[in-house]
Image (cartoon, rainbow, N blue to C red; front, side, top):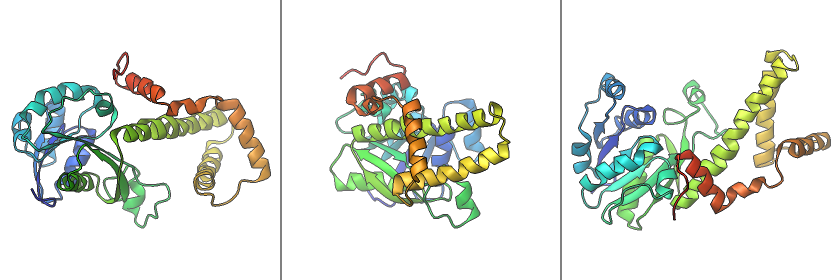
Length: 285
């Protein structure tokens, strides 16, 4: 099985992530089968110039099966398709939640893997308008990816990495972690913390404009610039915060942040968070 030219089945090829994955795979020399059940997704797939294959036929001969379907569908999709996969094939999901929660149908001769894009870094040196416009990644702006694979076989890992680099291209580095560590990164670090802070910034902007009456252009300008300074100073230490800023930051922490907020990094809190995301009563171990 070659690590530069292998067969891939994309399940959910007409969805949001499925279209991104499929667009990139079309630029490779891999043999790819595209499967999609929804009428709208099938129409999008055909409109993009891609043929459709029945899911059962697509996975039967695939070296790697990419599941570009919502987390809530993974249990039923894997129960249907994993029994049909060939021995030695790889099942690749694009989020760790269902794999960590043990919701995926497994087979001892089918390797489970998970991979997630890092998205282009805020510190990426962008050179073209296309790179500036690609804030999500997978089009023009380079990004890293995080991957976990339940196999120590170098050939299997190479196939997973080649696929990850293809579906999230252009990729700089692929970082290897465990499934649990990937779940600690996504959702805890980046969704529970970083994305929540992004939404909080937008709410603060709204209050500044609509409650305090500051002109919106002025508020956006100072917020966008200071967000870059805050991230550069806070994450990289580019410049020290001023003494007055440190006092204001402490007031913000006391007013907004709970004293026990770091509990989100505990295993039981991770399980609680993922159970809510997956609409489960609890994650069973």
